[in-house]
Image (cartoon, rainbow, N blue to C red; front, side):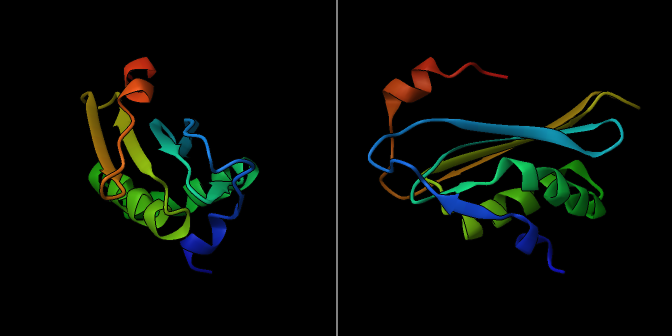
Length: 117
């Protein structure tokens, strides 16, 4: 099964509003991956996200995992904005953050209220 098939979606309950969704988990022991996004027409099913993350661990490097998740989210959810953070504490602290957004979408008020990780 292709990993994108594990990233199941459902309709956004109210696409008129911008709001932030955050999902996180451990694709591999000692690795934390966080997805934050502003949905458009679809939202991710949270219970399926853990199974999806396990399939991403095969990409190995933090850069590979973060970029794979961003690519999959952009293709399956087509969010207004998305940010993926992948990090490990050992053997040395290592953190990768990637971001993307739909052309011409911006919400400075929402961004100013987000806590930075």
